[in-house]
Image (tube, one colour):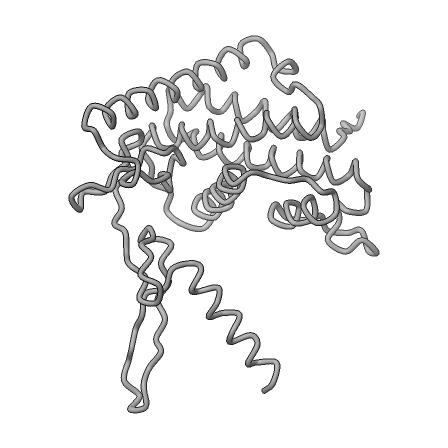
Length: 261
């Protein structure tokens, strides 16, 4: 029996094509969306590793001396930035964080979603994949797809574009100021409206409250807020809500103190 051998890049394109095939099936059976998303995240991870390999093959491995285990998605991003001088935009980082969150939710938790939400997330992942390949590998990935898969990709993208157009039109019709609009934590479009304590995304329908940080008064999405019990001299609980920035500062302060224990 002949062995099937794929390069990192070929493996990545194979994942990408399969993720789109799963997206096609998901239009009939919604349960296929989790496979489409997971496989697309794998396509992204292998593509980032391919860019690292082009810099130096050893960078693909966690330990460049042992060359046994390969780097994670987050490690790939760090090495691309620090070693290969690959700069990603804020939107790119949002997509990577989305990928990490989705993978964690699908693998370790209950995965609940609305079709509009997961389609938008999937298209965001696909968009990052195509753009990264073009910008950092000088390859037009879409040209490598089979015609039927390529058509499905365009259909999905057009669907999300239409939803975004309708959402922005509604926002304009309601005359909602930019200060009351945030990037949705689920679909990652700038269509999340903060109005009259009824916070929701006009594109995907996601609903979530904002919580004010007890340290800096910054408002952040509820799922991003951290809780910490500072206690007091009497041993009573003293819980505080912290935004991501204040949580990181607190974590750094405690790490600093630990060095002197």
